Length: 430
Image 1 (cartoon, rainbow, N blue to C red):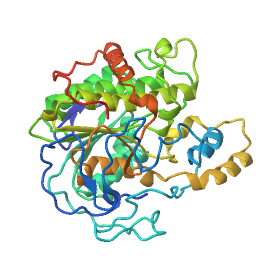
Image 2: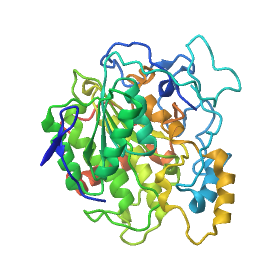
Image 3: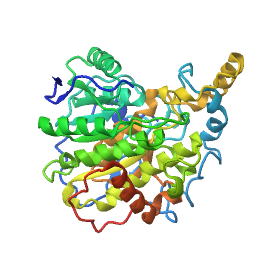
Image 4: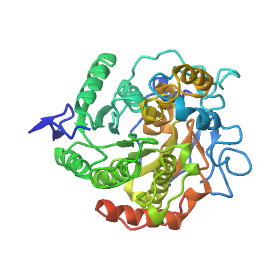
């Protein structure tokens, strides 16, 4: 039994149970369809200036000398997060303002720089203005958190959105909420359980068979610091969901994303946690020992390595850009495993209050996802890692091309993903 989504995608009817950037809140100016990028990269933001060159460990982005501090240290808001979140971050976390310092903070015409002191002030709500060419966007885990906020923003731009979610009931409820918030929105849901590769294949086959287009694939869903668990295929849960499930999904849908006549974008939601990650080929699946945070860091590093290796392999004729991002430390359901039931409630509340200035709301956490999925500023830019809508240097380990290639080959072997038909491009890892 199959259900037909509003964009005409025939999908399984049931499944297995189980900084404000300009593009985030402002009405976009009319634009023409994305042309095929003349080069993979380049361009510039009218408010932030020329785009930096592709980052390397000895040539970081961001305007400073040396790469950003690896891990939660050196004045990074993640420092307190690393100390506090393991006991307090969860559903009761309050709404918080983002840490200052982001660029492209307030929507303003190119000739009007952001006023000093207004960097973190959200703009007034803007009416929805349809894009010149509506896109079709698939968002994994789009029923909640930053995925939901990204879907809402893109729908207001006139795009079509498919929420690819594990829980059908929650997905249906999210679709209803979005339709109430954005009248006339073309939004639908489909069953996708990233912890079950057969579900990933079922979703991909149904989507490919539907004849629907795909302009943006946003690999957003994830799990963080969970107790030791295994996917339906026997993989460590964080590696399986955060990396392997999305890896297979992307390669299955690649024929739609690499049409030379239709520009497309692949956006991978990673995390600054990749900076303390290491790809442990001797125990990639955590069969010998398990640490929740070690496994999480490995899975997020895998997201960045996957981004860079995909960019390296893509020929320009593919007309696909691929980027990854850090959404910030966000108060969402992603932290559901972090609450410690043995900590007294009064201490939890106290620590939550201390952490509150450092956490973003889901709306703020979605800003960079919205930017990469929709902004003309990043047209043709590929193989980058973004934070607060700005390309920045990722960890030195993320630029190891040999590790990226080996991880790719192992991921193909573990998932049975179809090998891309295109030859390796003459592009170095960005």
